[in-house]
Image 1 (tube, rainbow, N blue to C red):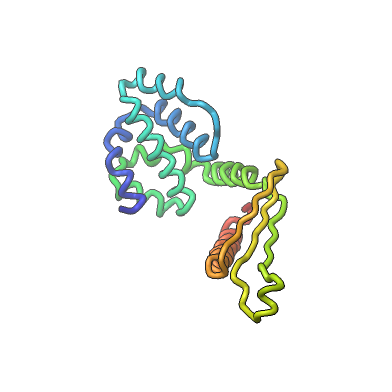
Image 2: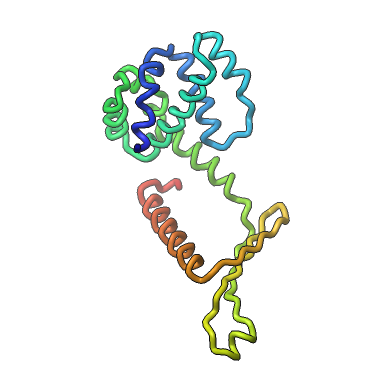
Length: 189
């Protein structure tokens, strides 16, 4: 099941919710997508009581909005409209989403929040475990030791085999390549 399929069960409910409730739920979803630690329990109860929607359904709708935000960030406006209408959202629902009118603002806000969140890393060092024993026996190194230091003075040491380390290096290189291509498309990133 792909991400778009996950939206289908809530389409009818989301199309019928008044726009004020949609905007409130979208704000909650944006704060959750930005890894907010804010407690939204009272807002959930208020929406649930005011619009006669079960709390569990409100939570599912918030999850759907987070997915909509991710789809919005991953596509241009035409593709986004196509995907949303293909899932079954009404044209009025799609056009009333504040995301479309303020794409640059929402994109920059979400990216800035993610940047702040990831600024805890101070250093990352790695060494290959070549002990004297390995040199004498002419054996290949078997382990890599990675040390991660964070701003809060915590240090983590991870030991892994060479094969796992090479997978990690490959995936990091792939991620950096994708980030580079995103920077070409979004210069503010």
